[in-house]
Length: 200
Image 1 (tube, rainbow, N blue to C red):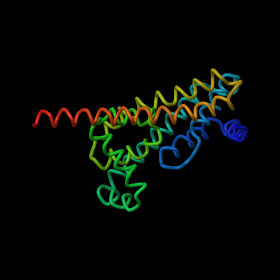
Image 2 (tube, rainbow, N blue to C red):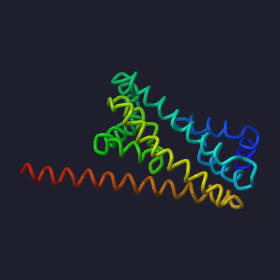
Image 3 (cartoon, helix red, strand yellow):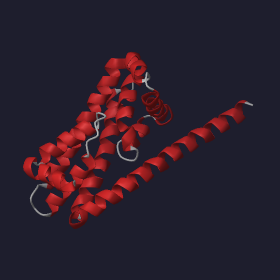
Image 4 (cartoon, helix red, strand yellow):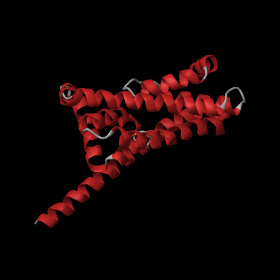
């Protein structure tokens, strides 16, 4: 499978990487992380420019997040009600909204790279919650910079072992996401306990 992504990146360069990161931020199951790994490998071989790969991946990710934010802003309560019609979507949206309530901009930051599957939902929830565009953009850009640099850097460093790296990262990202969610839930629980004790 990774050979297909290499062919796409080889044929279309940074444009396909930008498109992949853009679409992955809009609920579409696009393997943007693998595309960035491939881009980093091509940089290591001298076939692509580091600035082009980083710039394409970062631009696509930020634009995708901005579209998600605007969808949430324009859709408002109606969009939330529509998304909540299905239990699965309602649960993920509720988690994204809880993340924003308790963490604000920091939640946006972590959703871009540490809990990436939640990212598109946080973008929509941020728009729906009325978070200011400037605040959202600052935290979002900071997080996407980490995400892009991490994957392109890993692709550059481990260009000869991308198959193994992609598989290992898939497992590691799942474990990291679960860990971050557990920490967030633990922090919320501790806050509630302290608040209840203070009100007792």
